[in-house]
Length: 184
Image (cartoon, rainbow, N blue to C red; front, side, top):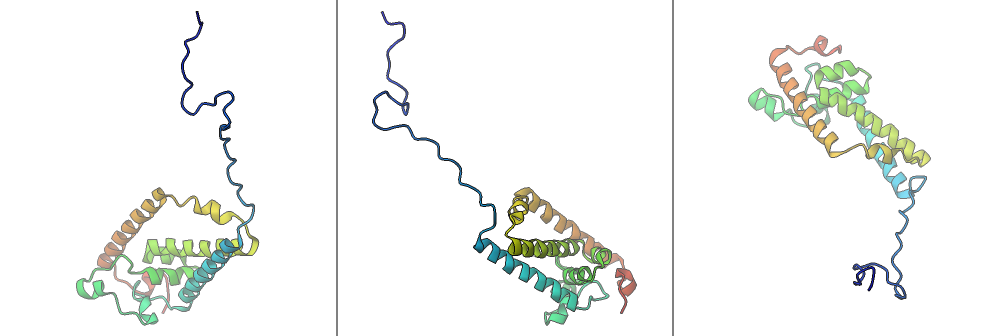
């Protein structure tokens, strides 16, 4: 009498004498210590673009009204303001970038909080990408991994709050050079 019941081995289990050896788990691919040449090239292009945006923002004279700086680039005035006397979600962004590029972060924040945040983010991208392009650092990967869907949703919520602030500010405050901390 057998002490153990006889049955076939579970599917996929190795069987003695089986010519097909069980698969060994492959080691995870090695993470390169340095950024690859294509990654460094992309970072160099991103740094160039971010520095160009900040350079144009520095070149523009911020509008004392807190919006409308973009017309100096040949763009039309905001249609929302013209038609409804209501700022659009991006109203004040160019002015905020221009103020932030000059180092006037508080004035930039008061004009358009999301514009200030994006200008600071653009500067951070410019510096980080230039560093990665020059040194091959993996810093871009480390920071890029932090951009999760939750962070994107939080940024979208901040953009809505900033727009609400801009609408409130446009409706309640008289705009002028003193209002945003600039002089004519």
